[in-house]
Image: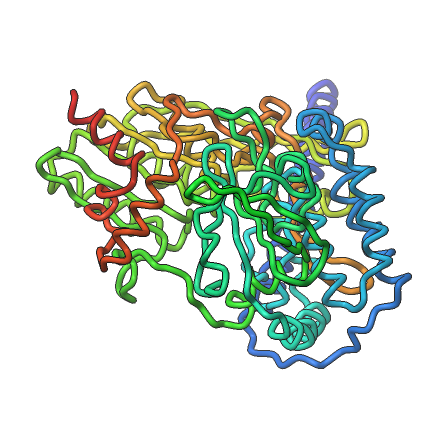
Length: 555
């Protein structure tokens, strides 16, 4: 009897210990779960702010020189010095962050007003390697939906709205004060050629001229010192970095004596001026102040049609042509449904996915919606990313966006945060199409991810020129400068498995470049009133599409 009581006491004691351990575990899980719940609640509480129609209070936007220098140093530190890829990027691009900093700091000291200063910061970010380094436009409604992750705590507040709205009003007169007559040069297969738009009618005499030198030096030697909004991008066929467009004016900023080769072979000299404020006014006036003159594809002009893509059916070739310019999650299901309808209507064997103008968007849309609709097989595709261990990165690691997205396995070690981004694809296409993916130097971010995914499939061929890359640079952040509240975006991380993607982009399987003769033919057709941006219209001038169709026809 005594032994039974002793055994019972021991049993009850063990049960009590087990129950205590279970209670402790449940308590720990409750604390963790409650913390996650509170973080999610905080996230959506802050996110709800952008839907509120709150007024703003005008704030004093005057900056002292000390404030300008302080903000500039902050930007340099977080974008350049804290970049885990700093030394690699400097070596590959052949530049020095310190030299760029020194040059621009001297320019900061010369800035005349806040708009001049803002324009200079815009140029500073654009000359650095990285397609995601960009000043955000002073328009609150636009930049709060800029697809960055570490932004809620620092960005979606009344204080930021007050500053951004005040800057928007302050810069209006600055933007409109510029005489917007300019000469623009487009990079085409190793050379820069002048082209004119509606803003530069007085300089049409130089249309088609090739830019040879600036102040006696080859234009390639000047490419990093110009105040352009277009970041350096790699051209694999000509083995050099270039800026997509160069913007010059007639009288404002740094003066260059340019040598131009006219279409008839004659060499002429002309004085051109380069100024960041002028560049900003030319590039962003319409975006900031709501006046749009941008061309729109005829296939997407109607309000009842999607804004990010259009699809054409070529029943004779059993081909579906998909022009996809932006990875929008809001149109993902519609795109998948339209692809399904098109491939059924054509009994498709071939698909052309044209992402030459795809500047990115939602990578989850590419991984979970577009790619599964195109491919049958599954692939495992994961990117390992390293971030600097600082406040914005820690906030990103804790934000619900990281849990709900494709980001896994966050770890802190040796001054860095590492994580894995899962970009694997579960294929759901009904058959194995022969797929041709058209890319260009403008294809970057999530567009670049689409190109990388395609290269993992045997039934896909990537055609064009090297992409702009940065599909695997890790999470993208927004931040603001402490003194001015100027807002900007940057990519703080590096894909440790594939760091060269941020330099050289994705290399196509078949190299094809847009040639000057293609653009000339397009301009000629437009002058005749031809619709040049439809699938049929492109077959009259778009050399890359024409050659891709020839490849298909030869099979």
